Length: 83
Image 1 (cartoon, rainbow, N blue to C red):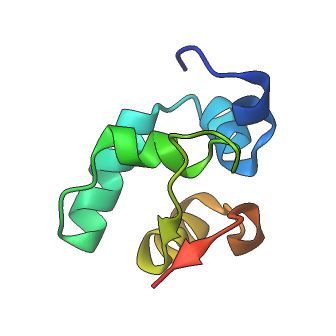
Image 2 (cartoon, helix red, strand yellow):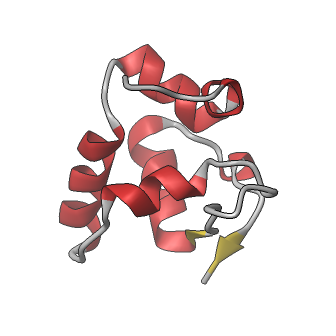
Image 3 (tube, rainbow, N blue to C red):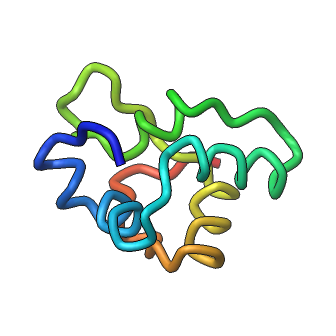
């Protein structure tokens, strides 16, 4: 699963990655196909960083909903969701 910080491992998304033994790249690929747009791995990694991390980015609503449907990551897992 790569090198995740403790905060990343504690996040529901990080827990899902560990539980399913998949990578952020796998999720980025799935979202790219599902949402029919490029979803870079680096963007996916930025979604579940702590809010105080300068690399943090809010997740888009369609991506959050796709992750909820496919991987059961609740919308409440994301501190900020943008339209």
